[in-house]
Length: 342
Image 1 (cartoon, rainbow, N blue to C red):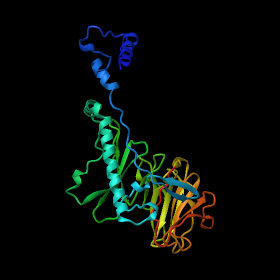
Image 2 (cartoon, rainbow, N blue to C red):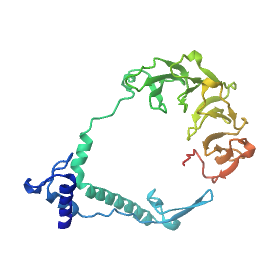
Image 3 (cartoon, rainbow, N blue to C red):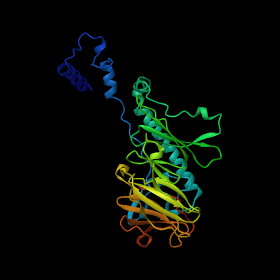
Image 4 (cartoon, rainbow, N blue to C red):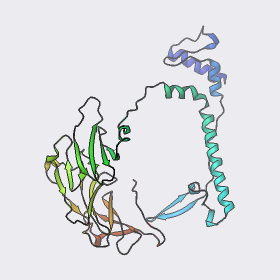
């Protein structure tokens, strides 16, 4: 250890230009740091090296979309129900559950040991900086009314907040906007009879009743009618695909679906957006659309898939005859929703 201490001391003297002579107990003072002694440094380099705990590995192989996948830690996801090689044994389930608890305890002990010498630094980081928290919306004033906030969304540029305020018992509400920039104007506007809303990717605000495009700061009289559902047995909802590429207009009945989509980056100052119809509505056909890597992924009950299945189609050929089935489930299972990841 003497070599390390001398090397450190020489580095301080020769490179940092700081003289350690004359300081009590070989104390070293660095710019921007609190003083510490050579003994502190010895303790630092001599401290015990801790190895992180490693959980046991039980490979579980699976095949999805033609790709083989092996997960060595699947047993940790639900240890009470997991059994190796599908052997149903209560003793095995209990054993796996105890292993998870043991591993969590080891992780906590490892973290405590490794971070033991940083407690003072942690306190400084926690309490040494001013808080940057800001109250975006305070709903305390609603407690004495029959209103509640149904939904709220922050705009893609994080400058505006839109929130839907609903009267108890009503199906629609009033859409309000708040400017999150402290030094800019507060938009004194509100839109009535709103069922749902999303932000467009170019900061245009869409709202359904019919479906309108509304530009923040403009008069509601200038809103652009995008779509009107004339079938009184159907209602309109709007969503945005998970990759933020398209806005979807969903006309839904009790047992029908009809979806149109348009470019989420469309500039309304240049005219009306092109609406692309996926598949015309027909009794008994339900489907829901998402987009990823130039393909549409559609969750549907087509072809008597009463528990739904996942199909895929290109943007150019997206009608039902071009749907390619990529995932189905057993009669005892049902697909409720899908998530798409990169």
